[in-house]
Every structure is written in structure tokens, then in C-alpha cells.
Image (tube, rainbow, N blue to C red; front, side, top):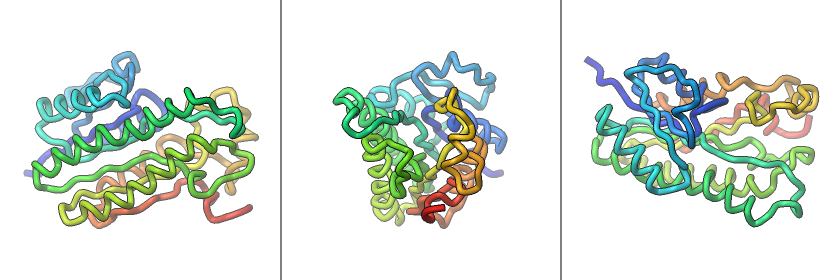
Length: 240
């Protein structure tokens, strides 16, 4: 009998995170879903789903998530670092507070939970995966899509994904990233669709499920590591 596997998903209350949670549940995984107020998110109750409230930028939140995962489901097999914050401004308009918020959620939120997940995977000795949601524009900027300061963090996540893929390959712990373009999430509520579509070579933006499909692929692709998978309608290949 195949052992049931456990996935942790951060930033799971809505948008891409909620779609990733549902995709794992649909494939019969046990799931720990976390965000600042995940218990109020309306995710349907399930014996295979644990909800953990907390700020992912705090080490104590990461410790709590990892403890609950092991106590309730026995293992940590996959981690999806989806939690992230973003604000579009001209470079000179970003504040020190903006920068600290990006670092706390996007970088510290990656480090603390990834450290604990990897430590547990090493203890289990059966490998695992860490998949991180970054951004197509981190490495392939678009003039009209201003986001220079948050892209420092997203580009850093792409970089550490490659470093850790090399560091842990021998233990069969895989590190990959999904780099979306524009996705139809609450982050873009109120933004005209025609404007959003203009950032897509295909003229249409992705749905959260499209990103979730890429996450599931990378989580289960046992020989894929160190990959940044662009789900951006081809925006990263150049001017259109």
C-alpha cells in the first residue's frame, strides 16, 4: 500500500494558494494550509486538511506548522512556498516599510518554513520537494509592470531555488519554482481586464488553477530539480 503524502501550502487562503490546496486534496494528499487568518478563509473542512493561522514571516509560525504537520499526518513530503506580498510603484515611491514587508513575507517566510520542512525530510530519508511561487518579471521585467523592489525578493527566491537544488540533490530533496505572469487573483481586483491582458503575449491572463497544475507537476516530477517553470503565456521569451 502506497503511503499517503503530506503537503504544506503557505498563503493558502485565496487565489493561487487556495487552488494549490484543492489540487493536492483532489489527489488524495494530506494538506496543511496556512495564512494569517486561514481559519476564516472558508476552505471546506476535511479530515485531510489542517488549517494553521499565523504570520509566515515569524520563525514561531514555521515551527508550529511543522509540528502540526508531523503530529497530525506523520510526515512532511512537499512544501509550497506561495505566501507573498507585492505592490506596484515607481522605484522612488517605495518606503522602508514596504521593503521590510517584502523581506518578511517573501524571504523570511521562505527561509523559516523551508528550513523546518527540509530538516524533517532529511529525518524521514525519503526525499521530498519544495516548490516556490516567484514571478516571471523577476528575471524578465516589463517596463509597464513596475515592481522593482518586490522583484528583489522574487529574484532572490529563484536564486536560492537553484542553490538548494544543488545542495540537496543527493538526498533527493528537490527545489523548483513556478514563475507566473499575471494571474486572475484578488490581488488584481478592480484592475481592468484589458489592461491585464496587455501583459500577456496570448492576450489572456492565467487562472489560479493553471499555476496549481504547474505546482503539482513539479511536486511529483521525481527527476526535476533546479527548474524555474514560467507560466506566463510566453512573456519571458521577449518583446511581443
